[in-house]
Length: 109
Length: 111
Picture 1 (cartoon, chains in turn cyan, blue):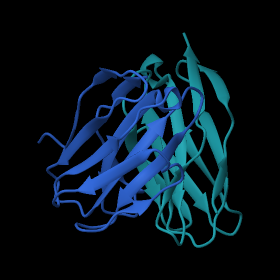
Picture 2: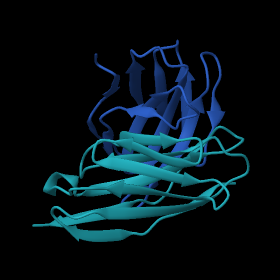
Picture 3: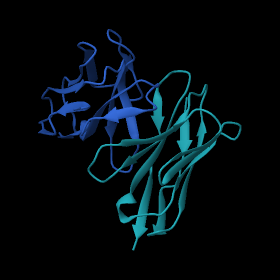
Picture 4: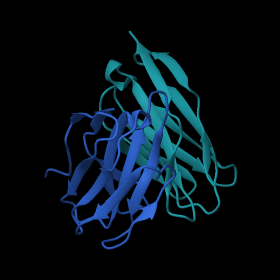
């Protein structure tokens, strides 16, 4: 089976940098993804890492270390609109994507 | 581009009633998924279809059936709704083992 662990809540102030960590256990590995979900909305794809290292997309970056079964999402220059839930997702040998329980990011002015 | 279109957006059922949730995608993706999301939880996979003509159970398939009608459409059916099926349902399509998925807007179902 697959399991993912991420913090339930993270708080930060506008303009700051925040890191949301994710550790996973999976048999087989096809990559780690991150999604954003605002209250009442649908999940939106943010990033995907198949190989070790850092992927940067604007203010958001995602990192993967396959040897440590660990990844993180880094959000820079936080804005109020970044307040949302963030999910890490992995897929193993079964090709079934598994979501973590999500991290609620609260950005304060 | 419409992306993933899911209907209806809201539905209230009585225990024992049946209904079908519809989902269509216009991105020519092979894989489609149905998830449910309960408060404080991540998304849990109900059923998925890796390609047209195939369907497989996910983590929580009991009480549901699916049909992959063609490459574009993937429907979810509740034959006899139960209060435990009160949830928000999301349809998604993807090309990368579900790791870069596009989601419909969701269906809020109350039983």
